[in-house]
Length: 143
Image (tube, helix red, strand yellow):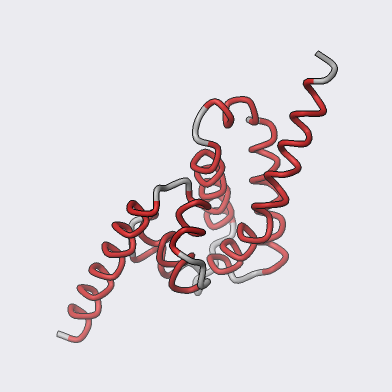
């Protein structure tokens, strides 16, 4: 059993190394505040560490993405930023996430899908939905 703990620590460390930077970019794009973004990402990563076994039993990327979204929502609820998160106030969460990662942060569809725990075709569905909803919204505001 003693060999089991270092393997978990290594797995978690690798996960953090791969996710930390894109998570921080995403959270900063949503919140607009660098220091708060770093704290939110640290909190989300800590939650994933505490739920590591459950996370590995499911889809790790999707599980961690869900946790990150929950922590961002908590941060927004506790200290609302009026200019922050406009895309997520306009679109459903998955469509907004897809658009933010791919369109605004410039991630490839493959990178964005992997980060969110989606298959690439699912990401394309979300991107189409985001584009359609934004176009409809622009049409209503100009009419």
